Structure formats: C-alpha cells, structure tokens
Length: 267
Ligand SMILES: O=C(O)CCC(=O)C(=O)O
Image (cartoon, rainbow, N blue to C red; front, side, top):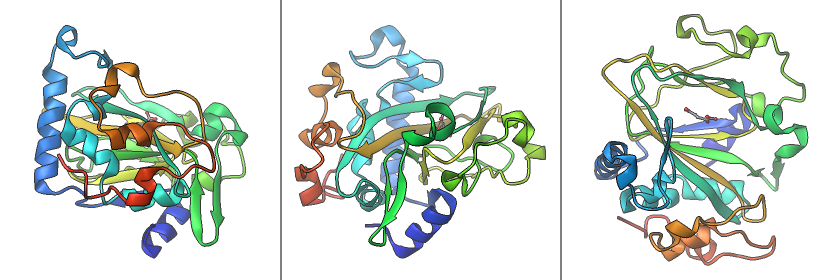
C-alpha cells in the first residue's frame, strides 16, 4: 500500500513525484533499450511495434529492462492501492520528445470523456482511482526545458474548467505560466504518477541538444474498460505481465496480486 506521505500528497494534489526511483543499473538499461527502439527503422521493428509521431507503440514490451518496470517496487504498492488490489496494465507507450517537439493543450478524463468517466474515492483510509498514468523518466527535465504541466488539486474539481482560463487552456510560454499551473522537473530515474482526472498538458520541448524519453504506463482496475493484450506481444511478455494486462472479473484475485511480484521480477 502507499505510504501515509504518498497517500496524503496524492490525495491533495492528484500527482506523485518519486525521486530516484530507479537504480543506476535500471536507468542505464532503460536508456539503452529506449534509444535502441528510437534508432530502429520502422520497417525493421518486430511485429507489434511502430511509431506514431512521438509515440513509440508498446515501448514497455520492447525490452525486458522496460517490461520489468511495470512491476517496479517503487510503484507496485501504489498500483495495488489505487486499484483496490485488482490491477491491470492497459498500455505502455514509449514517448519521445525530440528537440523542437510540440506540446499539447490542457486536458483530463473529465474534459475528454465526461464527468462520469473516472472515479476517485477514499474508502477505509485507502485511495481508489480507476484511471492513472505512471511515467518513468529516462532523461533529465531541467527548469526551462518544458514537458509536463499539471494543475495540482484539479483531480477533485467539481466544476468544469472555464475554457478561457489558463490562457485558453493552452499555455505554451513556460516563462509566463498562469497561476495554479506547475511544470514538474523530474530527473532521469524519477517516476511521476498522475490521476487521469488531473488537468494536465505538455509544453513544447525547448532543448536543442537533449531529448525527453518517458514510458506512459496506463493502469486501471482489472474490470474497467475493454481491450486485450496485443496478440503480437503475447509471445514476448512474461506470464506475470500477461496476467497484469488481462481483464478480469471484479471478484477475481490475480496471482500477481497475491504474490507481490515487485522486486522479484528482474531483467
Ligand atoms: O508528455 C507528458 O509528460 C504526458 C503525456 C500525457 O499524459 C498525455 O499526452 O496526455
């Protein structure tokens, strides 16, 4: 389960920043594998992989060093708490901002899919959140670089965001961020976690000599949503990862939820 500090911070802000979550070895392996994916020409990628702008599809499955991060010990207790012990990995893209990469306007599940699309609740002193994203960082983000924007606390907003607020919902100037928005600056090896109810956006990537690589790991409770493990990936993935990605009934308890795979699954 989450620590009391994590629970308090996530409940108040809607996000968590885990500093130095990856070991030096985990980070180096993730950096090497992600670069290998980026540098592989599309027509030479194995089945199940492909590039769509900055999105490198199924990046988590490209290499074992990336796959094992979906169970990383720094995030597994948080995944278990937020899904009430019934976790499912929905998808895992490798996202790459090259120099000059564009940003994206503010959005969240409430804006995109309606107020009823996502649940965030506290029960028995635990947080339940049925749509959240975990971002392991493979590159430093320094103040002034750009990248993720969040509106802390907005995951609990009871009101629709006025469209003109926050520079018409599309703040692009890091030097003049509207009041109420922050630009977290994780270092390589850090992990960010956000509720999809948290209003967030992306600033253009300013550095001309550095890129930003993150995994975008989407989690939900096992009974939520549809979709299945891409057939082309099945033979590559460990049985534990396949079980993590499988949809299941509300009452089912997955083996991975009984055994605590965090820390046992290594590259
Ligand atoms: O680029 C990021 O840091 C976050 C990406 C994201 O969450 C999104 O595109 O919705």
